[in-house]
Image (cartoon, rainbow, N blue to C red):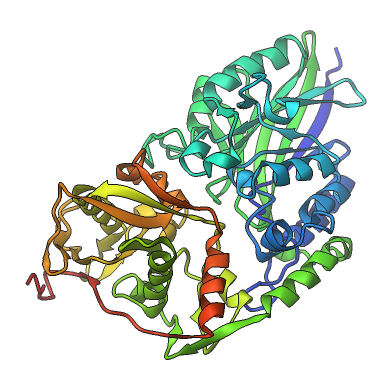
Amino acid sequence: MRVEQCEVVLLATSDLHGFICPRSYATRDEVGHGLARVANIVKEQRQLHAHTLLIDNGDALQGTPLTYYHARVNAEPANPVVACMNELRYDAAVLGNHEFNYGLPYLRSAVEASGFPWLSANIREAATGAPLFGKPYLVRELDNGVRIGVLGLTTSYIPNWEQPQHIEGILFDDPVETARHWVDVMKREERVDVVVVSYHGGFERDVETGVPTEPLTGENVGYALCQQVEGINVLLTGHQHRTIESCHINGVCVVQPANEGRYLGKVTLELEQGESGWSVASSRSALIDAADYGADERMELIADEVETLTQTWLDQPIGFVDGNMTIAAHADVRLREHPLIEFINRVQMDVSGARISNTALFDNLSPGFGSRITMRDIVSNYIYPNTLKVIRISGRDIRSALEKSAEYFALDAQGKIVVSDAFLLPKPQHYNYDMWEGIDYVLDIAQPIGQRVVKLELNGQPLAEDEPFDVVMNNYRAGGGGNFAMFQDKPVVKDIATDMVELLADYIRERGRITAGANGNWRVVNGRTSSIDAR
């Protein structure tokens, strides 16, 4: 008996974060990634393979000045990200957590403008119980009768980060339980031959050993999906901005294509037709590097109107700096107070009225402020659409939060303070190390984890652990994001719904000129080689 065979290729992007044109918004220099480069890979793959599906795994609509400008400044032109995805003929997209950042009306308008469905089976409307936007999965039937089902899932941890008004009336179900239900429906009722799960989430365990790599909060359950849900052939993942290829977990073929269009994920399925129908004979995953491809002119043309408006907006002068607020070494900023961190905390305290504040240096690309400040400078340093909350916490909570931040550091063999691997792998988490204003403290990295706060004072006196304090921080942290559980479910004294980018710009505009300075209220030391002023 002759065995019929068929090859199917799945192409996946994830965490594009609105990055279309291959140029840095901070410097305007050419970069080796972006959807415009990925577009040429997609076109090449479609020429090479007869049966392809193109899927975006979430977090497409937020993340660059381009998307911020369109969402917050001028939404009159067509959404540039959606327009480019329409041009590339995506088969489907999955809702990511950042899709909700600009509110439901903006998200609904993007979905309505899309020529493809947005999937997420575990995000449901509370009023009807139906999946948000009505699409839990997609079924594609090829010309030879092969039926491919694509189930969309999203990390259910969104309520811990997102503004409540952005997700009002929405339920976030457990992805594993949801997958069990819908995979069964797809196989039993839809008679699909191939089950693809596109999950905007990552892995809670090492993909090779199964050893836990993070607290099992439910933010990432990719490993559990592979181990606990029968019938999945392919798992497309994201959220963690990792590069994962040539990987199988419990027989499930896995891929994750990093972020901002750095790679296109590719899964090749070899199918065979037997007496009981088509089945997957073999599968393999790979990543194709966007840096090896030029930018597609059509993508750049589609994005050009909003891109040009964004660039003009970015170059608007806001104010001036007296002194030095540039960043020479990002590691140094996190060891001793820098004028940029002092400034951000002072703005948060000014607009909120709180006497204590914390903030982070989000990545190792922030340039700081030169003598002349533009909007480009602001969005290059404050890269997230965070708002502010003032929450009431105890002195004990403050100490616990400082201990959590202190876990960011480790000592190398020479006794030098370095970043802990836990904050670098599987992806950098510089944004989960906070620096505080309004209190005085010292972190000694020579001490055991959990005992590194060797000084914690307010107004020259030890901070009272049982007293309440009002602290201003970004909404992500206030909800416990980054495993800061001590902040979860604490009373919200004030909710400031304006984006930090706007707050920073308004603060500078009103004054015209700001002064760089740092009061040195905190520092990080290695007590084995440094003396500590415990006062």
